[in-house]
Image 1 (spheres, rainbow, N blue to C red):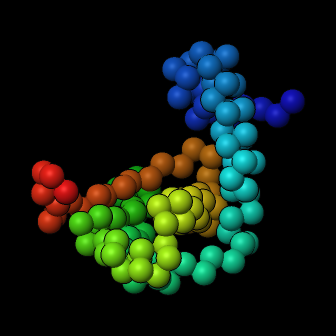
Image 2 (cartoon, helix red, strand yellow):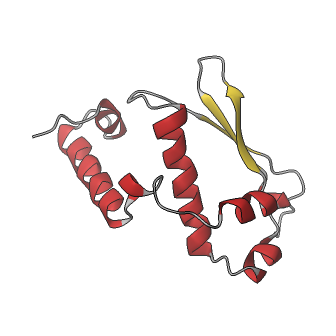
Length: 126
């Protein structure tokens, strides 16, 4: 039996059974969504999404964490939709970007990251 990664024990607040439950649930989700192969699959929407949705990795935090930035108010949903992009494809892109971070930018088991979500331009009812 594989060893449970420490982060699952921590997410279960030290409860071993909860840690294992979370770990197995994550493995099942990864299998269902083919996450282990996502970086080697063709991703024809990458350039389109990058063109109409500002998001990027830039520098590292004080403790060497990768820093990821998103600007959701600057996303051009109409242009993406006009090109056939669906919410499911946008979610797949987020899975791709996240897997890239944990496999190429910060491939450590105990790594942490910083996400900066720039909300400039978002109004209360957007």
